Amino acid sequence: MSSISALEQRYHQLQSAIQDTAARYGQPIPQLLAVTKKQPAEKIATLYQCGHRDFAESYLQEALQKQATLTNADINWHFIGPIQSNKTRDIAAHFQWVHSVDRLKIAQRLSQQRPTEAAPLQICVQVNIDTSSTKSGVSPEEATTLCAAISTLPNLRLRGLMCIPEPQATLSLQRAPFAALKALHHTIRASLPAPCAADFDTLSMGMSSDYQAAIAESATLIRVGTALLGARQT
Ligand SMILES: *Cc1c(COP(=O)(O)O)cnc(C)c1O
Image 1 (tube, rainbow, N blue to C red):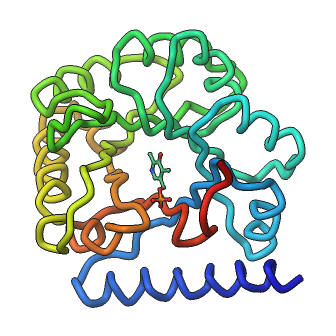
Image 2 (cartoon, rainbow, N blue to C red):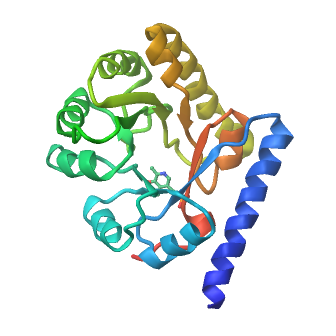
Image 3 (cartoon, rainbow, N blue to C red):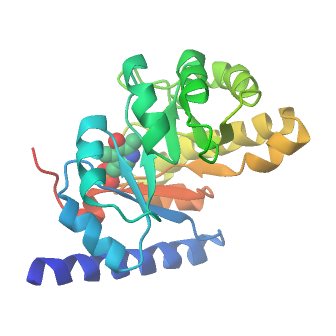
């Protein structure tokens, strides 16, 4: 029981820290995505009891197993991990959002494989904003072309951009790549046709160690794992 109430407490503390940070920088309060990869389904159930509905997973098989035990129809599942072509059918069928699209081929498959009775799949394009060698994502130059192509695909709704910058030691160093993603988002939105531009409202940026910097640069959605749920199982 004590670990459950500890999680509830951390959840409420994190929500107030997010609100305080937004107020400090004069920014809107972003949506919190609970990153539950390598965390047991019980923790998802606990956060659900607290009223939380948006959960993110990185590994498809693990996510499908947890989804089978958590049948609440109003959970929004977000896929945030690297995507291989052979995984797109299950992702298209079992998630509401995909944040990690970085190839047109993957977007085309998600579009074709999204069940016709389902709402459009919400898509973010992952950008390698600080062009680090280790992370996936398109270059900022490629992002505009990829977004234009995705915006024409049926069964998808292009919502915005996502990034995972390299860790940085100070808040101001952390802010730089988030500011760059925000500027790129602005440019791409201006290039999209009006109905698509209206949908393109999401900046998915900021994790446990840098969400405050992301909020300072007007993140609309932050993805927090460790700071909420504790260390992941290995
Ligand atoms: C794991 C992960 C997170 C959460 O990381 P924490 O540092 O535990 O908050 C956020 N986004 C992505 C894409 C991840 O893979």
